[in-house]
Length: 478
Image (cartoon, rainbow, N blue to C red):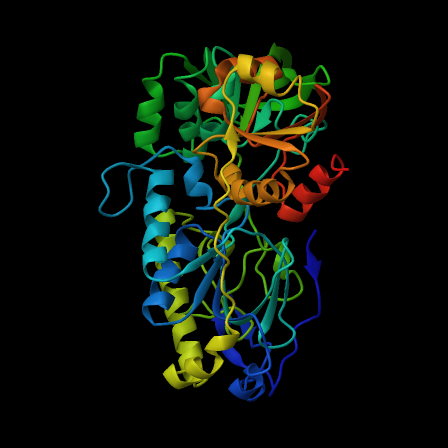
């Protein structure tokens, strides 16, 4: 999916930016002489600041670049708001005693929008840093010309690497308890991990499930004492130390059991769901062979700044932080990255006069369609509207706390507006449709079901880009 284009080109000699981890940190893709503002007059889709990622790091950066009067575009990615939207209550954010992660990020986004930051509901598929302005390509076919770039792509959950793990992803295997817990009401589940994230998942699952077991590979927990104290009070939770999953077992449709190895003993355990919290890896695949990286794939930064090995490209949050990994720290780094981007553009001479000259070439995010999707919530409605429909029908299952679902809804709505004379489109809030969810065997969100002549033809549980969604639905349009 990711396309890595050319290697870094160092113009004007090697630039010594500092000494990091005992090695020389070497310079930029372009020298300042190759970044003349006169080159901008013939280019379209210019963006002074492109921020890739919409978590705390990206949105903190947006506040500062927008306040500096710089046109800023945030490409939201497949999880608008970042991983913080997948937690429940945040209790260590300055000024907030307790706030839901999704509510915190909603406030953060609103602040950005009020300052003029524009949000692009899209995903970056490739970045070309071989020439300036830097080219940023999205899944929806948009190419942005970025005068500066802030990488805030965060991290992606690790998997166990077991056979059949991907086969049952979304059919019993998950990394998001806050997204999928309601689908396991009265079921038995396990959580794998020993840190704060694992215990957070236990707390999110406990009110829904019959029993939740925490499998810890070591003989102790890494989680904070406050989190351990909370889990100790959960009556339907238990912890197994020195334990790991050795095999995932299913019936072809969903997970039915696991094999758990505790010491030298291996036992099969019936189970309905597996929730992973075994760490994260920095989401830096876009920048392989383009930006200098530390072991583990973290972006290497210059001492005393958020500058990467490419001039005008900055990074913040878990793409570069392998020590703290906290939302507050990510926001602080985002502020630094925003200020670094402002100074970079100022040093290029990108002042009010330059902005005025190039403003007509700026990329602007188009207004969202005002098309209203039909809703579905009951089995009776399903049998009446879908099973007897002469046109193909699409059902999009979502919840208000599923960031990936909310990312896809604008795509879904826009496509529905264009195809509604040939297909019927419905959105289904899984929280309001328990009977329908059970009848159709929906085990996670997002889930898209397509029916033709009353027969289910497609079941897709992945996060789809707009082109992928268009291609999927197009198969059923005459």
